[in-house]
Image (tube, rainbow, N blue to C red; front, side, top):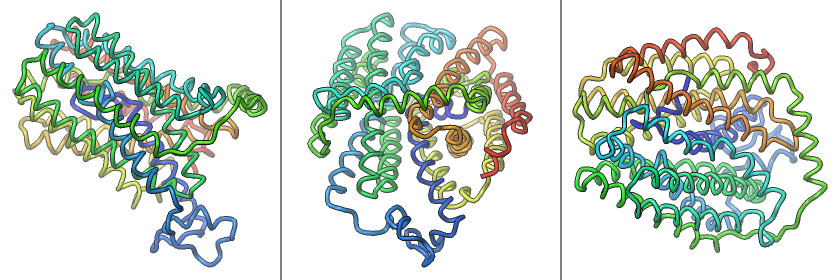
Length: 469
């Protein structure tokens, strides 16, 4: 059920949105556990009940004044994640102008676009490797700042490259470099968020900052991308978008002074301990079963790229309105996150998984009723909400098999399973749309919804212990 792969009008980059919801989920799940165990008062968030032990107090008192340095980090994370929202190749400002350019100027079909741009997902599939390198191989004495500086420079240079070329054979390799740089930066910044959040007892505030500014950037870039297409030719709109994306990482470079990081050396003992945990994890039957379940959950014939063709050619929506739909979808993601934070945290993993599948089927079938701008706005908002629930349900399940001392790598590896299934889903959907369904979207929607419904029958095969929490 590739909900997350179709959260915008064009197929967005899974890794960025999965990373955002993953961090939100980890904090929200901890709060939910605390509430269920009676350590926190649901009526007064951040206030302890009297029977909470002193050892638990520091992690629960989120409403206490933040230590010195937190304000600087809040500004840093706002900048970094806003830049990530702008610069993601498949969610940021270049995505709609790129798809429009390949469709209108180059004349590519949905299959050609989906298959050719699937390579942009590869850097996110191998994202766990960036975490390993950053964790155990400091660069110039730092595990985070040096890599973030290098990744930001690489992203900026690569987007300048995109703005200077016009042939797809040159544009796609340049965008691959941007994907590598953005995936590495996302991984490194996630490490900074976790480390400083634990040190300053401010993880909840940092995650909320990440979520807020990433989605705010998606809203702005969606509107701006559509506007550029309306006022410029297709090649010039892509160039303008690329130059805007190239300027964004400069803000990250300028903000590095907001982060204090201790100098580090290679930690051989920690490396060996983590390596042992990894080997044990890969021998776990549960890990492979849940990895397989996640792949099937997100793998079905997607309709992200065909949907863009339908919006443009069949419904005759303007490029500005298509960009607005992406912004509305991002608002749906925000609404879904709030729904989970204040209501759905009470549900068991099993209940949440079933709910996500039902919402997924309904949100897909809703596209059959999209006939004008009003129905499109409603459907895109609902789809964004359903996508958040799907991410929470599956990431919660994935988190149950992450072993101690290898949590980050294993969790990232399971996310890579999703990031692998997603481009395959969209490419297969584009093939069916073009070669089997004669460029008709309705049959593809029915097939996609049917595949999602079939996953309902796989839930009972998941270990009951992992669905009980």
